[in-house]
Amino acid sequence: MLAAKGGLSPFCAVVIPWLQPSLADAIQSLTMSIDETRAALRDCKRIVVKIGSRALCAEGGRFVQVAEQVATQVRAGRKVVLVSSGAVAVGRERLGLAERPKKIALLQAAAATGQSLLMRAYEDAFEARGLHIAQVLLTHDVMSDRERYLNARQAIDELLRLGVVPIINENDTVSIDELRFGDNDQLAAMVCTLIGADLLVLLSDVSGILDDQAERISLVRAVEDIERFIRPPDDDMGLGGMQSKVEAARRATLHGLPVAIGPAASANFLDALMRGDDVGTLLLPHGSPLPSRKHWIAYTLKPRGRIMVDAGARRALEKRNSSLLPAGVVSVAGTFGVGDAVSIVAEDGTELARGLARYAADEVRLLAGGHSQQIVERIGSHAGDEIVHRDDIVLTKKGG
Image (cartoon, rainbow, N blue to C red; front, side, top):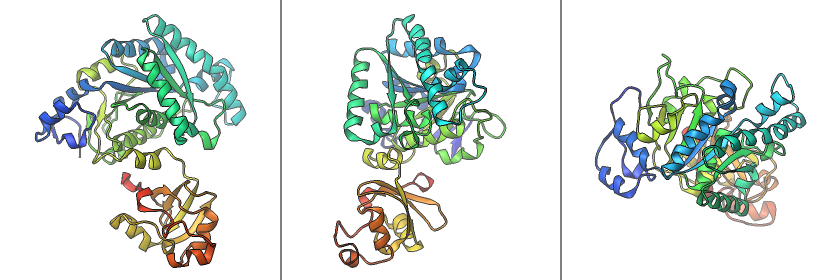
């Protein structure tokens, strides 16, 4: 259930690993009010703040406003990483383009043109507040390759240790489909895992998530409760919109993080949020957090192919947490290798899970519908009885 205007919310230590141990112990057997729940945000030490193109570029640009709010948190002893869109939007204006480019080369040109302008504006705003910034451009392969992932984490950790504010953006100049995050809301959720954040803040052009009466929802316990209120964006300034923010929030809450969505137009939203005031929409961690490895499989890796399974295999996956065996495979789409991420779908096309394949796509096609005892006979080798082992499977339907 969601709580829009007050009430009580179970908020126990087993569901909120981001709380300090002493506070978690104090409330382990208690029920916290909304005010107490929000007050717990004061203990957050590492924050990822994301602002999108629409919110950043409104009113002539909100660089100074963002810098002031981040500087306030840094002065309070918190580490802040800023994930910022805007390069394409700023570059598009400089190049005189009437709409967001659809041609990849032109999109990349706009990003390249806008990126230096974006960072110059941030540099001026943060320098006036005594803070240095650093530009960090990422592509999806950095997050999916362990060595690059660790290198990125170490670099960002060092920047934070030095008191520098990292400003992260997708490297749109070189990104192609297989290297893209999708949008910066999803990137921000991944950055939380990368840096070990304990709070994700998504700045928007509205006061928070609004219900069907256009009233702000204060507290959300499960993302599924508010999906019906989400509307698509009504312009082409950026890629995201509230739908993207809610999806990013779902991913973060499944990893045990609280997520706040609030107004970029407010000059003191971040400060008010960290004081525990009732501002924006706070989405609570939902259920038991996914282990880091399974969260990585489900929400960082990009599936290289799709395996369709029959009704029996679906029941085994959803009800018994079973491995995927050859007998349950109906068909295979795409080209993937051993160890690649795959999407496991039902016969109606609904995605059920994601996992790591033990066999390549061509081998799975040969094994489809057969028994595990026939693996060597059909492909001449044996890497296990399972197409995808249960330890490498994460249910994704309904966030499962």
